[in-house]
Structure formats: structure tokens, C-alpha cells
Amino acid sequence: MTTVTPANPARVTRWQINRAAGLFLFFVAQIAITSALSPGYFSIDGMLDVTRQFSESGIVALGVTLVIITGGIDISVGALLSLVSVTIGFSYQAGFPLWAAIASGIAVGTLGGFFNGLLVTALRLHPLVVTLGTFALFRGIAFAVSNARAVSSFPSWFAMFGQSWISGIVPVQLIVFIVLICVVGIVLARSTFGRYVYAVGNNELAARFSGVNVSAVKIAVYTLAGFLVGIAGLIQTSRLSTARGNAGYGLELIVIAMVVLGGTRITGGSGTIAGTVMGVLILSYLQDGLVFAGIRSDAGLIVIGLCLVTGVFLNEFFRKDRV
Image (cartoon, rainbow, N blue to C red; front, top):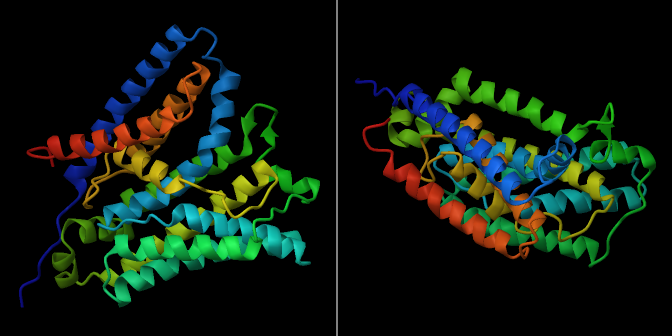
């Protein structure tokens, strides 16, 4: 019997790392131009304050990166985050100890991701169809449970997840984001599981013939994505001191744009965590720069759309003879 070896992602990874370096230079130029056009924009305090906003979407983007590398997609992350937020708030209001409510919220996020992966693999449905359905399901449950109400009566210590600062300088959520970048980045780039993720995205059939449990890999990445949504939901609920059904509205579009802008191919098989981080930084500070310059907030949607289309185009345009 002939064994088919899945494509080695090493060359793709090297190209993507080089692309991440180019994105970093673009990010530096972007900050310089924005600062020149809007004097007073650049400051250490201001730059760190922005990280409080994008750490949540960045954490979600880490999980979505793995999902897209396998050739999947998850557009339910925003709705799942709202369900996590509602679970934390309303379970606490119902009498749960806050630590138990937090654990319940993270568990709901993890189970939501597992449910997505199970539907994709067991029913062999397209991930877009599955996550479109669960997008409506998760958001509907969140609205049904909250009944258009919000919970804001949290104890003061709950603020430490989304409002506290280390030494009064660095936001706690930025530290959490950095730790997760390191963990997920090492898993993707250095572990056997990471090689399986690339193999499934490159050629699912070849990976199957090579002995890779494709279904287990897919379920694992969707479950991990759900867990990271749970962490992001906890941070956002703490930062806003509010649990509500419309939390995470529009998050899925922002996150996918960040991932694709960072060099992850929307068709799978290629991408890095370093690239995704640069996509998070570029898009977040670009939106913040527009707001600082007094440009209407709806321009942010235009920017996200342009970044998404540009990212897909560049990934496909430069793909030939470079992987």
C-alpha cells in the first residue's frame, strides 16, 4: 500500500513569516503617517489604551486562524461571544457564584466551538453553512435568555479581567493576548498537531491517507476557537461591566479581515500566527486613527471591507511560485 505524505508547510511558513515582516514595516509606516497627519496621535499611553479594545478580537482571531488554515470558516464567533457574555451575566444574576458563572461562560464558548466542529465533520456540511446556522442559533439563544435586558451588577473584583492595569501601564488583557499568541503560535508552528492542521488545509484526502484523523483535527480547532471566544467574552464583559445579548456584534467580519490581511489563505493550507497578529495591529490602529482624525465611524466598515478584499487578492496574487 502506498502512503501519501501530506504537503510540508515549512516553505509556506517561511513565506508567511517574510510577509509578516513586510506587514510590520507597513504598520510602522501607517503609524508614522497617521501621527504626521494628526499631531498628538502617537503616545505610549494612547497606543496601550487601544490594546484594551483589540485584545478581544485578537484573541478570537487566533482561533479563527487555525480554523481557516484547515480550509474551514467560522462566522458564528460574534454570536457565540454574546452567548458567553449572557451566560456569565445571567447565571450570576440567578445566584451562581461569580467564579462559577465565569467558568460556565467559558464552557459555553468551548462547547459552542465543539458543536460547530461536530456538525462540520459528522454531517459533512460546509463550514459556511454550519456556522451561518449556529450564528443565528447562538445569537437567538442570547437574545431569548437576556430578553433585551443587561446585567451590570458585578462585584468590583470582576473588573480585573478587563479594566485593570499592571503597574498602571500595561492592560491585563494585553498580557493575556500575548501569552495566548505564544501558546497558539508554538502549537501551530512546532507541534505535530500544527503539522496536521496545515496538512488538512493543504490536501484533506492526502492527510487522510497519511493516517491523520481529519475529523479529530477539525473538531479540535473549532473547539479551541470556541474556548478562545469564551476568554474574549469574559474580558469584554469585564471591560464593559455589562452582559448583554448584542455583545460581539459584527465581530466575525472584523476577525476574518484581520486573519486574511495577515496572510492566511481563505481556502486553507497557509497562514501564521505572526501574520494574524500583524493583521490585528494594522486594522485596529487604522480604525483608531480614523476615529482620532474625526472621520465618521461608518468609514470603519469601508476599511474592513477593503482590507478583506485586499488581503484575499494579495494572498492569491503572490501565491504562485512562492510556496
